[in-house]
Image (cartoon, rainbow, N blue to C red; front, side):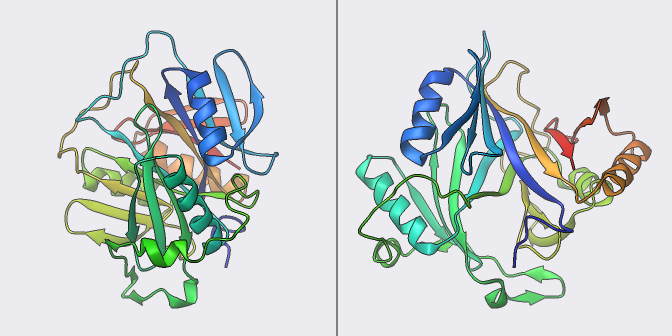
Length: 282
């Protein structure tokens, strides 16, 4: 089942501020195999399928380093189509001496690493949704060790040939300052459903029965401040609605909550209670 199209509400792309756009572009092209879709002196759009940008990187003059102890990006997650793709990619990371961690989440297998600016990246594959376990509207997710050796055995002799064109931005995971007002914003406002809670520190939400399109945590501390406006890291991310009326209904709900909204033509921007900026798209 595809959880990133049709009647689902999902995340489709992310926009990052980096220190050096050339350095970051080389990293994302060489390590992950992205292709350049469009570029200016200070901004590059990167794509897997040659049609839609999954990632935009922008160099901002006088930018500061990642702001520790603040809200913002924990990681963005690229969903590969096949387990062999993840195995090929893991072997490629090892060959490039990239420091990597891994987890088995029961619903998925994932590897984690960072870009040159310290932005977190997850690359993962989903197990078949028929094998996911649901109980009272909550999906079972674990943080077990990844079987690196078993995964690498699935690698193909041809190796990593770059990010497959079917790759999606599977989900995004954010640091937030408070889970209560965050849940109200994303669920009562944007229209997502809570599908998993990790105690009082993390919340996972989705649309259409996915294990999560967005992860939210307070691991930087409850009440963590937003980053400095000039700091590197997350600029914004895109949420896609199936149609205009569904997006407008979300905007109307956000207005009733006194959320910040900015409209310019067909672009609608909002920000969550932790100052994470979101473009609402159709």
